[in-house]
Image 1: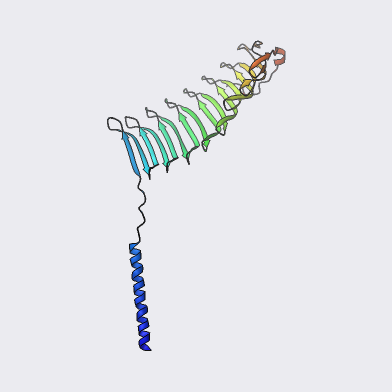
Image 2: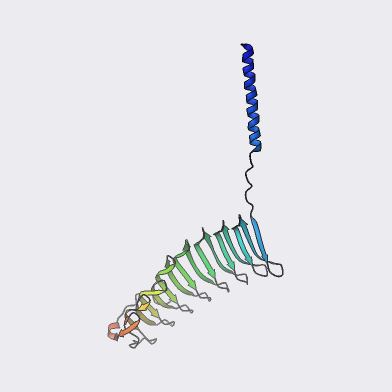
Length: 252
């Protein structure tokens, strides 16, 4: 019996040793995990050898920064990619080194605050995007620093109150727009500040009673009238226009 027990234990020991050895063999001979892909860079150059562009790739897709440069080496554009899709900072500069635009992309769409400048360094526009569409208040400037237009955007188009200024700074128009079309009541002024008109629009065309005044303040009978889809169809005498309130803020 003792001999049999010894034989059994010996066989168990051999089995354990063999099993451990086989397991180690299998583990040692398992295929190694492939190495993660390494990013690569592609560069192009001007004729004199200075870098024109630098594009980073991963698995054949743009990944990381894509940059271009002016011939003097200063940055021209910078965009950030994630697996072939714009995602991150976007920035551009003029040849004189001044910034042209700055914003960001999220999952391929312009998103958040975007700023644009003129070549002279003056701010050109300021507003926000939501998944590629302009939303909320936007402001535009002339290159002399005077506000050109203040507007509200929805779904990528102007949709709401709008104020338009002359390059010298005076308010010359205020009303509502949808896209590029004026809607509803608009007040207009001469650049010198005198009231010019109180007009009604529908789908971007004069429609309804429209009243005009000359720069000296006298009522303009020839231009005033009842309009239908952009055509003047009848007069509107001065008495009908007397005491017309100007609801919107006067120019400043």
